[in-house]
Image 1 (cartoon, one colour):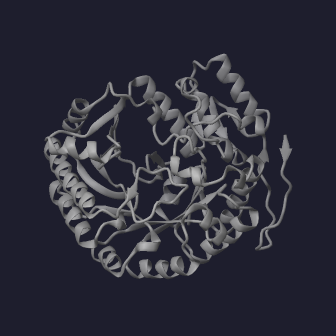
Image 2: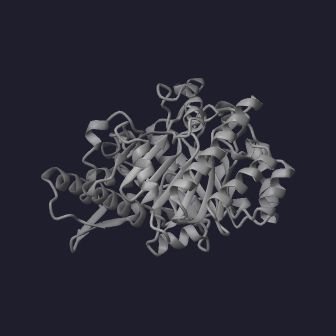
Length: 455
């Protein structure tokens, strides 16, 4: 094992580093934004299954909507999202027309069932849409789904947020905004194709606060090309200076064979596994020392933010947008590649925008694949969710010898404890949470090679 040394924060507070056990981090594992994971989706599940699921939503059930906008003004080289450049107006207009038709079709299948309480817009960059077009889109959604004062969340490319968009955010009472910051280091920004000076983020943060945004999130990354401990700490220092309500600190996953745009990033410029682990640890220590509460394994929130409260009261959830305080079992995805979640089913729209438009224009759903969630899958999903969200779970009575052996590997290193039939993750186990959760994933072995490193 490698024991990372204790060091000092810039604020002068001492900290205790996590211990690096490379033998526990050798196997790539899912991020477990769902269970079964998207790697298990297949074309045996289709539009008919989706239609039945919509028609079975209970009348008063809380429902959340996710709307995918697959366009960006510029494509960042690190990004694994389903997105393309928004420079062709006709293509943009055709997509929004298809999205409006899908909204109408899905709302008719729901038939007034469910109560929409949240609407999230992601991408891509939703603010690549003209503000007037976005107002029409939001109006279509609220009318079709009879959404009464929903909580609206919006992902934003801070380089392209116009004054018109700021006015829209204020007038539409958009409560949650997430900024794609990633890094403040100019050299690292150039290496990932996303140049955005600190002053842009600082000014925009002030404007978003004045526009009434209640929960502001910064997406940050470690493990980027030419990034080191000093540049990460500088980025975190700048971020905390601006006091976002939430910080997500993700590890960059370099998979150029899967994401061709990542071929512009030289593997030789990336930090190695030890450096990545150190950066993740330093980030955790620095952010928590600044008063943020850890949420799951890569999110942080100020104590008065709803996400921190959900983690504190064991109401934290995990869906395709990451850790969330949304407790709804019904998430309806709209747009190309969007995923819908039901208690017994996951379904995903086709990723290809041309195929998406054609399916909708022909009057049908754009569902391409999915997976049924049988009782066994739901039990496994609950175990994994409890580990990742609550840091504990009740051990099932039918543990296999292999599962017992794997649990002991973590227990003997002081990362977990097993008492009174419960498995408890200790604070030092945070970087190993996904690996521990994978012990209870019977599907993992058949999907090896599809996932990223745990840290």
